Length: 301
Image 1 (cartoon, rainbow, N blue to C red):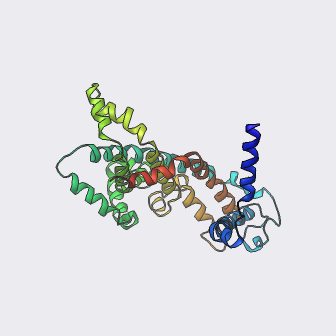
Image 2: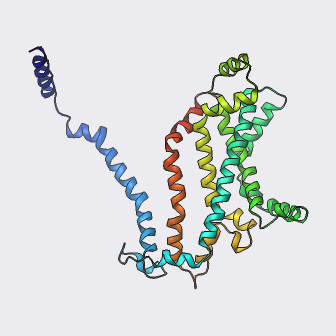
């Protein structure tokens, strides 16, 4: 009886509450649905258009105004007759190695700036902050001349070398990612380091077994950003990789549409759709770390 009475009272109380007026609903919730719908349309329209162009029969975008007017897999089949999959392999190798190297180098530097006190520490942090103001593309002439001279001594680090491109990416990404990680490392209490030292742990053991596990969100964010930037880079890849078999996807796909007279937009669209899959999958896999990794470093710096 007591349970029935409580249930009846709660139901009556819920019925007694006045409904939210339309004006209040629109001011608090309704406009958000409209903004969300516009954002979905704005972001989804180009994706639908490029997918429609990839399954179109023609090799131009002229007849692609009607979305999915024709559907065929000829463009995807034609990719097997090109060096597309070789470019995919090159891009995945370069982007993956760059992401791993960026995480390892940036984390080590950030840990040193966060935990140790040494001469030049403040100057080093200030230098990293200043370096972020200048994009890497400003140095492409110097990079070209450096690799041209270095290739005469060490061919593996000269022009037309994937290893040289990776080294350039690592050098350009070290500053911004170190500063980004530094703020996150400061959120980890130093008392954990002191407790581990009392138990006899070395700096290496503390770094690899404790610190890196606690800063996994920022490591994932840096790896994702580094992978995307190197995956989609065009200028440096075009500058350094000169032979067709060493090209990345950005360079190779551009060559298909660089000439107006022989541009094959259907083949380009098919390659673009496939090349977007690794980035999307990586983003979905790491998305739970992204918000925490980007915001936690701003709490304590």
